[in-house]
Image (cartoon, rainbow, N blue to C red):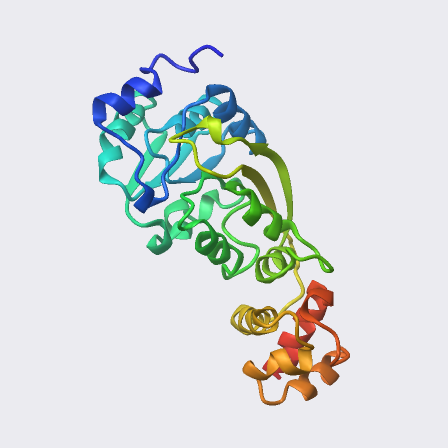
Length: 282
């Protein structure tokens, strides 16, 4: 694939700025232009859209998102070594790229996006592996709901992606599947092999797309997350036992939610867990 812009090739940018990917930061840089363009396109039509990207690194996906027509990209990068490379991209696309230096787990994304852009805001990111799950959980727990983001197109390790889209009855169904299923519709779009990265990781990755549900069943996110953590913390046990760590009144909660106490966590769908959370909050 030809260069998407007339900026220097990514390998040259990485070498010039000394941007070796650091395991401590969960970094694996994407250099495949076909792949970055495909990920950007997967985020939908980007003309006029505001896009939040976490962990842009040297800016390969950033450039693809801008080339796809996003009018505003907010790139949150913790690694200060990458800021000079991102500044070059910002200069090439004047007024369209905002680089935020900081830890994405502590950044108020809704404030950065601003109220006027929430209808078009997308998240498109090759998330650093070591913060991918906490970031997703935070976005799924956003208040008020519907959230500040209209869609999220994100890269995860394949095993994490499978847990995000999992439904009841399987070994991969757990806390992430419940939280994602509660407030979004999630699906795996495609896999990405290790060879697409520098350095290549030891695992296959997957692109997951999440679309917020307009009206998810109401419950307290804190209560739901604590309850689900307890239920799946001892997933082989019956709920009457596994939920004892959540509440000494586990039997009463199960009765109030209409769930048989002999069932196990992996057998309970999202609506069942929401019913339990609502019973616990009463």
